[in-house]
Image 1 (cartoon, rainbow, N blue to C red):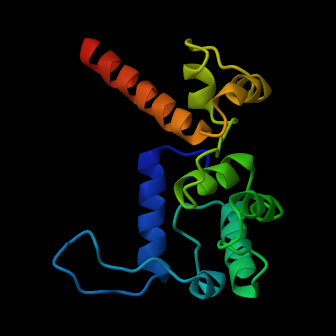
Image 2 (image 1 turned 135 degrees about the vertical axis):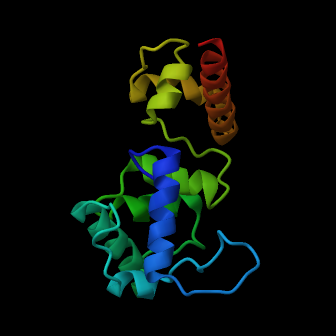
Length: 165
């Protein structure tokens, strides 16, 4: 989902699951495949799904690191973030997002997120990532909660703007 909308990210992950995941039978129409294993992702044909070549390569490298054991999701969140950062195509936003969502790290903070940088500034003009990092120091060790709050605030403002329009 890096650098795409939530809707686009969900579409891409659905395509990925359908292409490389194992089919399952459920009474839920939308649930037809398990998410692919790292080994399956390493070898799957991911062309034609709407992913760029660099994103496909990042997925393969990530899957390979998991299979090889060089990426250990049971390590501390800081260690996982550092390990993720060594994989070409995975930037700070993605590494922090994984720490926030997948690892439940209460201090994860994707400071390069454009929505966070704008909403924290209270305007359409975004703070720099470093300025947001500096501001967020006061929120430690619970910055992930601030992230969720700020994203919710941005969503509420966007919804209110649609209603007003």
